[in-house]
Image (cartoon, rainbow, N blue to C red; front, top):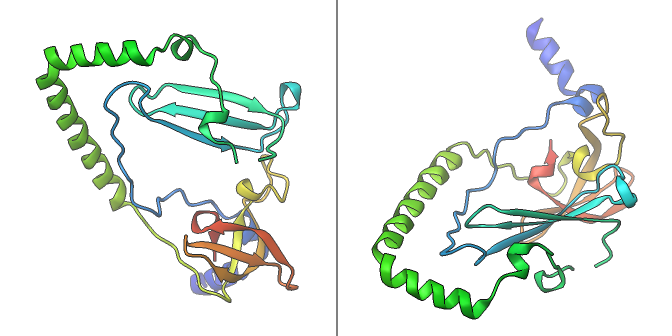
Length: 205
């Protein structure tokens, strides 16, 4: 009876739509080190979300690698490739920054504390390697081939209502192409292709 129930669940469309989304990592962690505050930034766009004040649906988020300082700016829409030079973060930390003064103080600090900085850099690299090793143990990579039928993460596509009782997945779709970056081109079962490509994180069989 247990085996029969398991086989029946596998082909149940409602079960597929509401199956839990796996949070297991699928790609190795790449540790990134930063020598001093605000030397390296990561910038990304997240959304769409439910509309908030000013009809904003998206966020441009910037994170400093050294201090983990986060800045975010809401946007109403995304109309083009936004590069870091096009984004301003009007905070005192940024407005008060002076490249010349920063370099001078950096050289002074290096003269007095070079050994401590080297020790801190070694500890940072060691800790990040330890974290990456632990993270990589949990990787469960998924790959698909052309012709596979897959479901797409509804939180990523927003194709269906994503409220409390909404489905976690939507589809199914057919894999019709694979790019060099391991993203997949999908099509509806009727054959209509979907313009955007998706990585394995947003898909499941």
